[in-house]
Length: 203
Image (cartoon, rainbow, N blue to C red; front, side):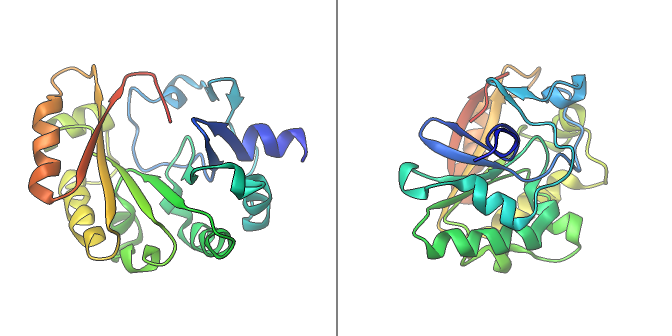
């Protein structure tokens, strides 16, 4: 495997293989390292010169038997490239991979339709960044491009529950005003799991 694919298209953390799908995003989270033009994550340079093709991502996944999960991620939002992650996910699942999608939950808003049925047979686990317990704080910290993004995020979670059983919401502990317990309660109310994350830590 070439150095470029190893360090840019795919990387390994915590026993999982992460696929760097896109640097494009529909949020401008001020706590994201890309806002400081820092594309390095735990020694891996994730700034993409071009977005990888489906074939390059499949290659970057490597030997899936070595990993607990194959994770669609990026310093960007993977669902922007919905067709690509669906194609790659189907291929890797057919080979026996367990697939997780890390997302900001704004895929429906971006594509102007419910994309969760597309993910039904492709994704085993959804990790959705909630990041705040209300719209005001979400807009303060995540700077969404469109109005009503927080509501769109909550609606995405409800849609996703119809198709994917294993869903976790996450929030970053250390952001001003963010109440981790309140975020966890939102997850409980929606009937999904919750995981707190530490500021400046990924994975």
